[in-house]
Length: 376
Image (cartoon, rainbow, N blue to C red):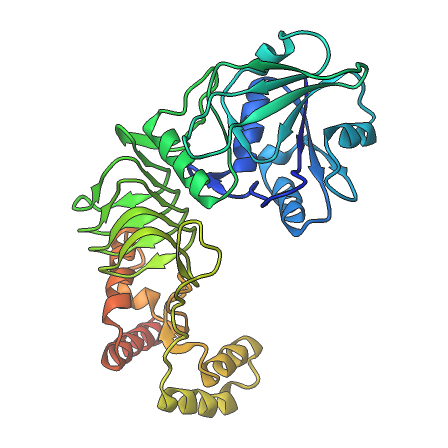
């Protein structure tokens, strides 16, 4: 069986939108590989299509996937001709998430067939895939397929599909896998993630690999926390997604929101409605960084960081592990012992983010310098 994932001629490119912790393109590849298909992906000059090509090169799921380069999104027949294919193949639009067995479409008859899937999400477009026969002529036939399907046209539909997958209601001959431990019905925690015992997770919830959820935090329903993200204590998230490697400070309340390092925005809205301010570096700290430049000038790495501090882009004292509070001098080692657990580190970083002050920075910085002098 051969399958071609082809790009839409119109509309938004959605291949890298998140569906239950993995991009849509990964879900399509998992489905086709489970059915034993030989896979090709159409790549055109669109920037989003180029990003898909980079993702395929960097991830194991992209191995043995053929890339067919086209000058524009010209449709599955043109892309298949560039591959030198003949006969029948499965044409899958790049915006479709489905759970049917492709063999059902191959059994529908000879020639072209368009398979329609039951509408999984009421307000979303109906998903359809096509069995293309390059050796046949005439109008394609139509058939209904068992299973579930949805055309993911935007972020709202992708989030609704995520909710269905986590609830277990997106069903068919093939089920979308969730790469995490299901600690209770609809509550998934991936490898390396730390959830404080006092945190409350209300299904459906997905906590990504290496993420941290602090004590008193309440997540759900319908929350996705990206890989290596930190949700500080006493945050309240409902119907929200925290993007990978994002630091959510203490006592944040977010609903129907995408949370990232540089923006908070409603789900489905492209332009951010609010952006965190740049680091509020005092004039005294900037002047001190400028003075330290004279001493540190021979050391290129330190020189660059001090220049950033003098320009107000870095704190003199901050964290190394997260982009939320970067600093020239990292005091991570002063917060917790070197043998501390991931949970203890996450708690300490969350506390520091909420308590940062000049007095605290001075104390932690002095403690760290004394520790290093003793070690020397």
